[in-house]
Image 1 (tube, helix red, strand yellow):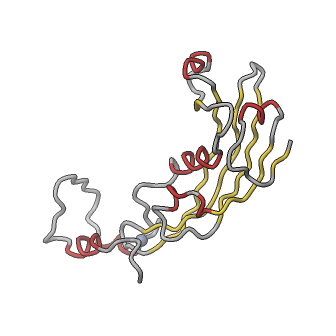
Image 2: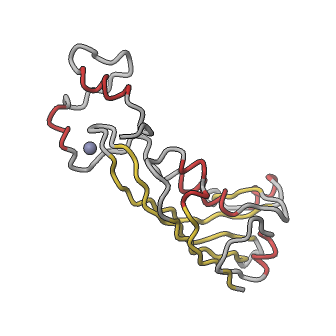
Length: 175
Ligand SMILES: [Zn+2]
């Protein structure tokens, strides 16, 4: 079975029985948790996943999700576009207890038979791949930074007034 548009809710185990291949582009704006941290939610997420059963009849969701997001660089506070990619390899289980049968290195999620929102599963996987503190690889502000001093206590206000000022600017504020 082949799916080219994403239903709101799916039946993951039936889809695995039918070896369902999903290839679809979903607007980024539909992923509200992901979009919340972005400068804008233009663009889409390309999804290419398969629901299938392995030799032991365990249902799996496997494939790739990729997109490009616009975040605020935490050094220069300018927007930056960043590719985000998630490789998905999840066992689908009816019950938590069934995980005991899985090898230790297999990730899994517990899902019901129906009304599963695939977009939420994908969103979780993508969120794991969005950096907490995005920064340009070659950020121009780099020159102003002190070399790696990881102070978790109060920021050095006197030494770095620009960073403090910048922190007051909300990323979502209009230009
Ligand atoms: Zn930067």
